[in-house]
Image 1 (cartoon, rainbow, N blue to C red):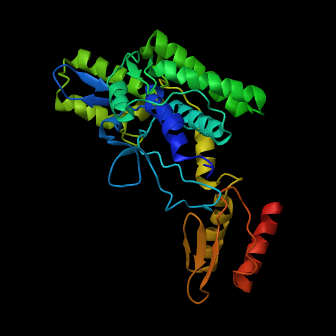
Image 2 (image 1 turned 135 degrees about the vertical axis):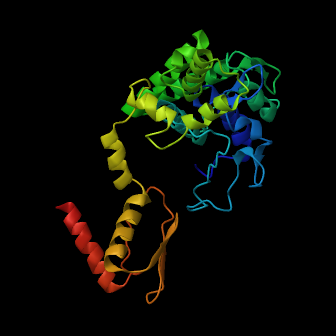
Image 3 (image 1 turned 180 degrees about the horizontal axis):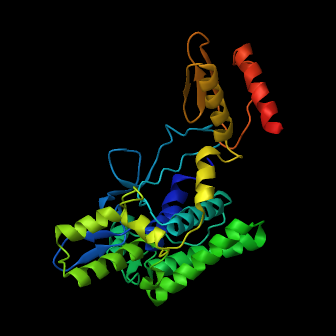
Length: 336
């Protein structure tokens, strides 16, 4: 995120988006009571501050300006700790995609409407507790809007922005899915039982409760909640739904496997990956962080990778000659 984005912008422009995006990005949570309470988000109830620099306190945003992992004169680190971990590819795609669009609008100072919340911490709790998604929350200006209505305001701003700037096929697809999801949430959230985690999980548990006569405060129901997120394909409930073709996909298994071995070509991860591979081949001991690579004894060399979007770095002055020759040979092989 650009260093031009201020704390005031984060509070007034980004926080309302993050508070309300849980209607499609929440992963759902069973609240074991005899009334069968169910929440949209797992992390929402743990939020205690809007924006905080204290890593021991759960904030909607945790400021990490002391650990930017990039050139601090150019970038800020956007550390969002209030978002759930998703199983659904669709929910992840929409969560990341819409957030990236909103950050673009903020960086270009395009978000002009006043959507600041009167009490963002209370609002994130209130929205999480409402599976109808129609509950109104109070804005700082006194207006009362639902999470869907606030998301529609952001969607409208994004449309205006993209009408005036260059778009691309991925952004266009995110916009289409975003609008479609908001429409279906407004009609009936349970329509999204193939796309959105909290809906998928709720339908699964509702079915098990009915078929097996379970009580909502039983350990079996809590177990179903946890097992939905088990990442082991052979036992996780989400993975069973995936195998049975009962949830929407965004990518293929082949694309996932490719991404596991090929980092994004327009980021420093590309060069870092090559460097580590070569270090392993040459048996050179090195340390790798977000924004530096260090060669240990006997070389004692260090160079910085301060630009997250730079995929190639000139290392002639910082790596040993024999290692540099190996690096150049590797680049030559890659070109052929």
